[in-house]
Image (cartoon, rainbow, N blue to C red):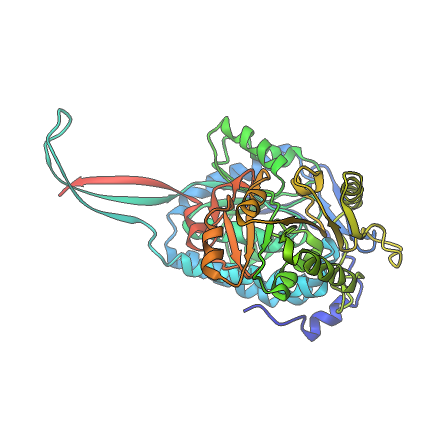
Length: 505
């Protein structure tokens, strides 16, 4: 279960020194190795100080990790489910035991607030290991009814039985994003390991330390050599080679659409299986009969939930004209009321973004929004009370038009744009009017109407009167928001290939 907040021991750790002087190594084929190219610093986005150092691997080391996973695959795929279950459960237990030391580390390298870091990072990762340990018990093969077949030149006729067996796809390169590194990586490797795949973990360059700690946990609880490998690098080449080498059978990536397109092209040369969870530009449709408080609370989560660094966020508020002024006024009030501050302060609601480069990018989007005719009602650029760290406060750009850059492109930050609409048809067309289709929201007092609207949205996920998730659903993206889906049992299916086996009845 997700805890209600930081525990006392975690709070104590948060208040201490978060810099790590630990020497991290990479795990390749069951051996701990230094980065061939030394190490590189991990910068705390709240303080701009060094939070620790990560190994700087070479391209050759990435390939070695893939080869180790390839060598380990046959034996791991043949490992009885009971043993896979035991190891996944052991990983969950050990991960939970180490939460008090992992939460401060995650906060220091990601900039997540104490609330987000303690509730949505380690606990959710623990839940995912437990979930897929249970999933490993399940037979996911698909039995088929017998089929009456006539004789052909190939074979005599008869009643032909069949089953579709789900086989592990092989070696999976798991490339995770910087916003929820531990949670996201657990969501990739737990189902992959459960069905019999081996993995190479490649965390985002900005915050790999918790993933290196995860590798230590998996090694310590007894995963065999080569089943789990990890490499880290600040440079793109070691990750890129994992998308190209024939040693890797599948790439599971969460991140930007631009990088996803590059992976799609690179993987085509060896016909890799792909699971790409990419960008989003979530629309929140607020109809005239919507509960305004519910809509405001959900849209304001863009600002309060990890500083808007989440692809499912409702960053486009499409509001019926009869409610437009009321909703915009309340959104502006909500934006101004959220405390922007140090992640270690327990009442902080908005922490820093991941880097100075990203902060500058956000500010350029805000400037462009104003230049293209938007009204910047709440301007989050350069919060005056924060003299260090990569901070952008909640920002609200009202009276936007569909063609504006801030409306069309994913900003992935604490920025909300608002647009009015007059009719249901117009609202649907506006919601479908970007290149993205990951997660949209419909707010209406008439749930039957909201359901009908949801079915017309070109989006892999739609929330009706809620921003809450159901982790058993298929998490898919339409258009430029991705390829393939995970979540629940679908997460296990994603790491398998189907093999049809037939026999005479």
